[in-house]
Structures are given as C-alpha cells and as structure tokens.
Image (tube, rainbow, N blue to C red):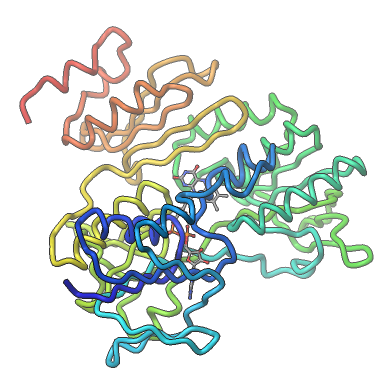
Length: 412
Ligand SMILES: Cc1cc2nc3c(=O)[nH]c(=O)nc-3n(C[C@H](O)[C@H](O)[C@H](O)COP(=O)(O)OP(=O)(O)OC[C@H]3O[C@@H](n4cnc5c(N)ncnc54)[C@H](O)[C@@H]3O)c2cc1C
C-alpha cells in the first residue's frame, strides 16, 4: 500500500476518495487538506433549498466530523496547498506545513468565472460556489426583500436559474440577463430551454436574451443597477453572476502535470504522473475517442473519486456509467443523463406544456442523452438504457404506447 496518502481539496471528490480508500481496506494515513473553514459539504442545496430556508450548516455536511474521525481520515480545514513537489513527493501549505506522500490525489474543484467589466467588484455583486458565498447571497436577498429591491441574475445557466427561482419564492422581482438566445444552451436542446423559459416567465421572472452587459453601476460602494451596451439599465439591490466556472488546476499546472482546461486524467482518474490521481470538477477526462470531457456534477465527483482511490491502490476501476445531473427550479426537477452534443434528432414523450416530459436525443438513430422534466421514471429508465448501451428508435421513444422498459429485457 502506497501510504501516506494526501488528498488536496476537501469537497465532494476529496471526501469520496478518502472514504473509498477505507472501503478498499487501505489502513494507512490519509490527510484530507481543504482550503475552506468548513468540513466537506454538499453544494447543490446552496442555490436551492438551503438558500431558501438557510438551515443549519451541519445539515449540508457530506460526512460529519465524527464519522471522518472514526474512519481515521485526518481532515485539515483552512489548509491551502500552495505547491506540489513531485520529485520530493511533498506538498507545501500556505502556513508552511509540509506533508510527504506516497500517493497524491488532487480534488481541487473549480473556481468561478468573473465578469471583466467595470463595477464587478461592487458590494452585492456575488457569485455562488461556496457555503460562504451562499451565506452572502442569502443576506443580500434578505436586504432586497426588506428594501423592496430587485435581483438581477447574469447568466441563464443552472445555478443562475436556481437562484432566480429561489428569489421568486421569496417574492423578489427578478430579471435574468442571458447573453445567448436561450436558457441552459450549453447543455439542453431548444425545446427544454423553451420549457424552462415558460416556467420562469410563469413565475414572473423577466428574461432578457442576447444581453450585452456593459457595466455595473454603484452607489456608496454597493451595486444599484446593471447597464447594458445599448444603454438600458436594470435596477438591482443584488446581482448574482452565474457565468460558469474554470477548473482549479493551478497547482497541477505549476507541478508540470498535463493540463488542458483541467487536469488531464484517464478513465481510472490517473494523471500524467503515476503517483498522482485527480477527480471531480478540476479534471478533464480523456475519452476512448481521444477527446477531453469536463463534467461538473456530484455523480462525476463521486464516481471519479472511487476510480481515483482504486488507482492509488493499484486497482483498475474505470468510470463507466453515463453522466447524469439534476437541477431544481420551482416545483420542477430537471434530470439529465448522457451527453447530447452532436445530436441530430430530438423527440419528446410526455406533456411539454405541463413541464412533465422527456426529450430523447439521437445521432444516427442511437440514443445519446435524455433530459427529463418531472419525469423521474424515464430518467431512471434512460440511465439504465444508456449504461447498457441500449437504444430505442426515435419512434419508440416518442410513442407513449411503446414500453421502453421492455428493451432492458434484451440480453447484454
Ligand atoms: C450552487 C451549486 C449548485 C450545484 N448544484 C448541483 C446539482 O444540482 N447537481 C449536481 O450534480 N451538481 C451540482 N453542483 C456541482 C457539484 O456541486 C460539483 O460538481 C461538485 O461539488 C464537485 O466536487 P469537487 O470535489 O470536484 O469540487 P468541490 O466540491 O468544489 O471541492 C473542491 C474543494 O477543493 C478546495 N481547494 C481548491 N484548491 C485547494 C488548495 N490549493 N488547497 C486546499 N484546498 C483546495 C476548495 O476550497 C473546495 O473546497 C452544484 C454546484 C454549486 C456550486
């Protein structure tokens, strides 16, 4: 066994690697080093339920400190690693501490993209990645509610739209400014974008497409409005910027690991250094076709974390299952499985107007991906189909009378 093992990043992937190591009977030392003040916590509720209710911090924990202690996972919070020395096999932290490793895992997540425009540093211009960010947004929304001020969200992706939905539930006026011509355009087909737009409009959100944000205007250091390139202004007591993330691969780059918008890993989460694995949002996985795949999801962090732990112990446990993700907006749960890029045909099943349907994406007649809105049965079924490489025809997928489950009875 290659102890001691050091894990950089105490988020979803980091804690998964630690727990999987124990699960695979590694009993040597594990140091889990995290820059944040909190132990490992779930990020998905930060834009959804937790932002609305602002329950306890403990309710967000992925694993309690007691459980980590019992599993002899040595968590160090407020510990930022500043350098990896691959020759000496040590990592150095901001406070000067050093840790020697036999195996190293990078699970450093992602950092928010910022807006390169004047006013982006005003008070109440906020991004959402961490629990501390969510706390700030929650307080800013409280202040907006009290003062009757609106929220402006820049970016019509998942996180921006979830925050918009949460703010509407709290009664704030909300405008979403999206640079492209539809919502969540990076991931979903126009039919799903259109359903999401209708959903948000039905809850009173103003959606602006083709938005060119030029400047954030302030008063006494706090944001008061968003000014567009065409001169229009949208008043705001708070601006949430949801324009995506960049993989946090700074340490890996400096250490000379292969990186290409993320730490390049294989299906077993191995980096270009045999002693170092990486998992989660910081990675770009090389696919069998030779392309690089970046995923930002809990499922990816968990599955890649398991693969990384196995690799550290000299086993092969490649990530195999189709990628999946979810997003909650109002009373609609959007669930996605597979990768729809390059699709040629999309068919639907269910009631689009009722926000209860699935969109099935095909290329060359083969199923690539399925997006489901309040259609959990079809999401679960699609996961099983895609994991087994099974495909309905487009006509079967669209036909409510065709039993998709019957395809699972096929051998394979
Ligand atoms: C608001 C929000 C909502 C989301 N909703 C969903 C959802 O509905 N469904 C879904 O599947 N996914 C969702 N995600 C994405 C999901 O949470 C991430 O994909 C997942 O957390 C990735 O795990 P990770 O371990 O790679 O990164 P993280 O969980 O970000 O953990 C990385 C950790 O590494 C630490 N770190 C970085 N550099 C260093 C360093 N040098 N030294 C020490 N520590 C370091 C960071 O501080 C961070 O704590 C959401 C994310 C956010 C922010």
